[in-house]
Every structure is written in structure tokens, then in C-alpha cells.
Length: 255
Image (cartoon, rainbow, N blue to C red):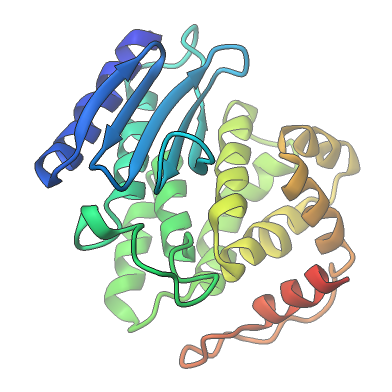
């Protein structure tokens, strides 16, 4: 199944990238797409059972992680492989022009990072019932209300899983999404993962199970976010770029 998954990912990324001036090179367990400026690399870590998508703007060294998905060839199937491939395609085609999506100078730390909407689209791959809600949210509001959507639509679905009461088969994949979103997300996305999602865990034994699935950076952030649990969060103001979550995380990062 590992080879089949690689083939699915290769085909979908090739369709998105080759027509935009990228060339494909295969090296052992890696797929490398390059246009001379950007290098996208897909690798599979068999020991960790994980697919990774990396980006470098110079060469194959000093690469930045764009996405990471757990994949067990013994139990996962083509549907999971397609979900991973679709997510990777979204990662490399978020700009209008694939060739310049990562080469432009960043205006701020958040300009090229994963947004709350992008996070919700990833979660919809794991929970398809969210897709119609995402469409309705986008159709109804000028700006995607990430915090409100996370609380009202996503949290009721994932809270039982995080607290160990439902569908533990999805827990590792859910945590993999969290790890990636926190690694490459903007401040609001990080806040949704920590303050809204991870702070919904009330059962301490369940929290320990979840923390084992988190990477070091997110685990530390979750501990800090737990200190904010119970504090009142102000409603979103759609016209303001900064939010309570952004300010809170900025303050936590300075400590």
C-alpha cells in the first residue's frame, strides 16, 4: 500500500505542478518537484509511518515542513492516500500562480501561513460532514469566522474523540492535523488548535494520551494554553486583523 499511496500522491502533485514549470525527480523514497527556485519534496518515513511534504526555496537542504500525515500501509487504504494527496496539492497551490507561491518576500510572519479556513478544510478531509458547513460559512460571511466555526461546528465533533469517548481510530490523524497546523499556521490557527480544541480536554488521562501524539512545540504550547482555560474570550470582530487569540499567543510567546 505504501507504493500505491506514493503513486496517488505523485499523480496528483504532478497534475498540479508539472504544467506550471516544475520537473519531477525520484530519489529512493522521495519525490522532488523543482522549477529551479522552489523545491517541493515528498518523503515517507516508514519507522514513523508518516508522509511529509517539505519546501525549500534554494535546494533540498534547509527544508521547511508544509504538511505531515500519518499513514499505516497495513491498515490505511486508497481513501487515506487520496486525502493526503489532496492536502499536499492544497499546500502547493494556495497562491494563484504555483511558481511564485513561496518565492515572494513575506510582508509579515502570517502572510504565507496556514489560515483557520485552511485548517477547517484539512479537518473536512477527516470529517466530511464539515464540508457543507464550510461552504455555508463562506457563502454567508465576507470573512471566514474561524473561531466561531471551530467552536460551533468542529468542537462538537472532535471533543468526544479528544476526551476518549468516541472513535479513537481518528485520534492519531486528528493530532497529526493539529501538529501540522500549529507548525505552519498563523497565530489565529495556532490559537484555535490550542485554546479551543486542546483546551476542550477535561479528562486528564485522555489529555496524556493526546499529548503523546503531539510534537514538542505543540505539546509545550498546549501546556501554556491550559493556563488560560476558563478565561473569557471576546467575540470575533471581523474587520480587525488581530484577535484575542492572536494577542494571547503573542503574550505567551514573550514569556
